[in-house]
Image (cartoon, rainbow, N blue to C red):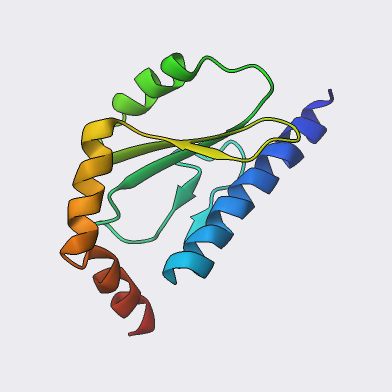
Length: 118
């Protein structure tokens, strides 16, 4: 597969994740340009607790990618994985998943949406 095709395939997954944030949570996020340093999906604010990496590959060492994410020192490291003709899957540490559920009960997502409107 050509490098150009691989990057286009990755970009499609990144755009899908960005669109999910907007449609499900009303949160506007940005997709980084290929090769740009940092998370694939980001926001231009300092308190954004997620580090989201998107991998659209047939073969992937999930635990190697998780180890890389853990080194990023963020509150919620998230890996979005997709294979051809399969649905995307979100992978995160179980402790972080339940922390996220608690945060949603406290209205964390509501605060982000209100900041978007103002």
